[in-house]
Amino acid sequence: MLKQYTKEEKGWIFYDWANSAFSAIVAAIILPIFFKSMAQLGGVSDVNATAYWGYATSFGTLICAVLAPFLGTLGDFKGMKKRLFTAFMLLGVVSTFLLSMTENWKLLLVLYVLGTLGFNGSCIYYDSFLPDVTDESRMDQVSTMGYGLGYIGGSTIPLVISLLLIQFGDKIGIPTVTATKFSFALTAVWWLVFTIPMLRHVQQKHAIEPEKRIIAHTLRNVASTFKKLLSYKSVLLFLIAYFFYIDGVGTIIHMATVFGASCGLDSMDMMVILLVVQIVAFPFAILYGKLAGRFGSRKMILFGIATYVVVCAVGFNLQKMSDFLVLAVLVGTAQGGIQALSRSFFGKLVPPENASEFFGFFDVFGKFSAVIGPALFGLVAQLTGVTNYGALAVMGMFIVGGIALMLVPRNIERMK
Image (tube, rainbow, N blue to C red):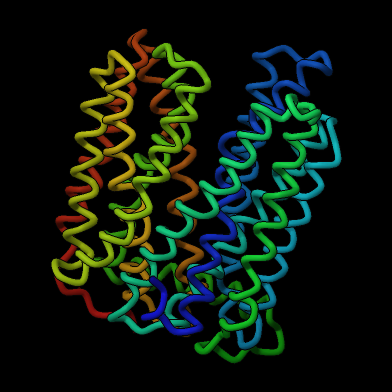
């Protein structure tokens, strides 16, 4: 399947395979449950444990969003991108591994925030390496292959191993807590081992020469980049569109478990649904890349937005388990494709030598949308007294994002 890709492209692609284990096991599924159980054993109420987890998530996201433009600018200097990528990757790997060595709920939160910072920081440089490993004509194909392998690899294989061990480990003498800790160690090892191809084969090809006063140079470049974004109306319009529709994608990802529980699904039902999403997302992410070569990435992103509008309509009328499975399949068809093509679409617009700098701002739009969407979902559900009405609020985000994207000109020249 990867024969048509160069060593550089394959090394880059495999980092999606490597880091997706963190997204699934630590950020989304196993650690939140483990943290709540450890906090309650420590005398923390269920409500407070949920609140502390939310605070830690928001805090970690906020740090990444604020630092992203500055980190991106530093990465554009000659010889810096690979070093900074490695440093943040190791921060994430070590923090994740240390999760397997403690049951203290406060320390779990600290390590989770550090792991989140390492994950998001490394992804800024990972995304900005895209113009270094391939040319504009192959960006869609390479980016979607990365997301596809991330779903079927990092998000599925170690997750299934971990869930099976947690569920059935006691039958072979492995306590649930031990099995849970093993899942964190497995995530760290998986992340590190499959990053090796990236470290070996991917190099920074486009860069700028730093001045002696590198901090002052960085601050000037951040201000300059922001002015460029404001002056290129088409690029700014795309980022506004991205803010709204990726907000919808992120809200569905973050609220899926809570929404399912409120609709009567038990934990095993939710696990089945989440695995369905991962399995379906793998081939469809790759398919989006192939179709983008024929119809263009802009049209395929719009198709993904339209799919999510249907997802929200189905979510508003959920009644039984089969409805959730339909929802899972629909989400899986669009989730990887819309994220991957957004990354490659933006990569085609920005100057290669300043890619990290611009992807820093790209990351800001994605991170702040993750703060607003879930809050809006909860507010609408609370005001109406009906959880399903939150789906309508999310639908509005996709509609606004789709309209903004349709206003982006069909042919946009790369920024100078």
